[in-house]
Length: 196
Image 1 (tube, one colour):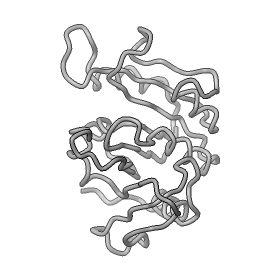
Image 2 (tube, one colour):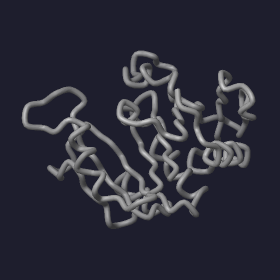
Image 3 (cartoon, one colour):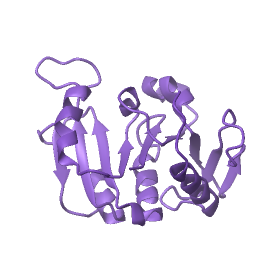
Image 4 (spheres, one colour):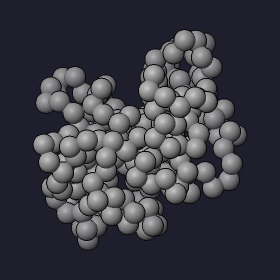
């Protein structure tokens, strides 16, 4: 049961695009894709399942990319009276899954609740002030960084021989995973992660 987390430095940096690219690049894993947000979307329940593929919402984009199922989990980032915290929302979410479900999360905060097989962090924009505090807290948890670039490339060591040197994948289009990044992902997903 592989689990991937895609986090990011801020809003609109390409997290959803990268999730869609991963879903499309690894269709055999029949992903259940999950977006975690603190923003209320049309008063939906804290755990809401998308059923229609399309381009109107992030969860609809997941289904259009090939996800088997897509969910939106809503929990405030700070305690708000009457609103469930993320741990409570996750408790409501887990019963929706079958045994052996392959999961891909779009969230920085999920890393406070689980350790994925692969954590990718999307870095966008040079304005440090606009970056999410949750991103800075998670840089050390990331297995690789991903940035938009003019050409697909890898900076750093993607061989996995040195776990302290994390690759930075440059992608022209975050919805199209490069062959080198796909090879790296397959290697990571097939290798059991050592406990920390």
